[in-house]
Image (cartoon, rainbow, N blue to C red; front, top):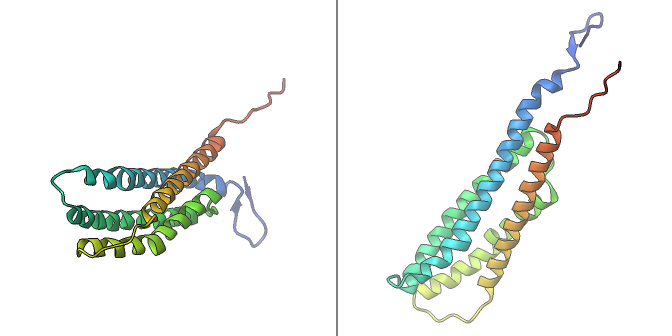
Length: 175
């Protein structure tokens, strides 16, 4: 329905409905990005990382050096996912959910505090220097499970929101 006022341009009340498919596409892309990020975290950080230490042909320094590169590049990919998520949220003017905020904070904690400490220890071990026992690896694994759990929760929340909006509404029929 268009409303025309003298001296004004015609404004459509359905303008928002024309943008709805774009918002839906952005929400689907958001769900896909969260899912891909979660898959990369599980496969790269929880499966592949410990698996390399099971290979008898890899010495500890070599396995640690490979691990350093693995975590570097998974971190780059995860940072790309966070940037894409931010752009998608901005595209349909949605605030991030609490679960997504927590996942992003855990990622920041891992990248800015925990991994630099683990990297320093790794470099000492590769150089043949002694290092004290530490529970930093356990803290990393716990934070990884926490991040993945919150990403899962955020993805489920976004899917529910998408399907809730796609659900047909009841129409009353008057006879």
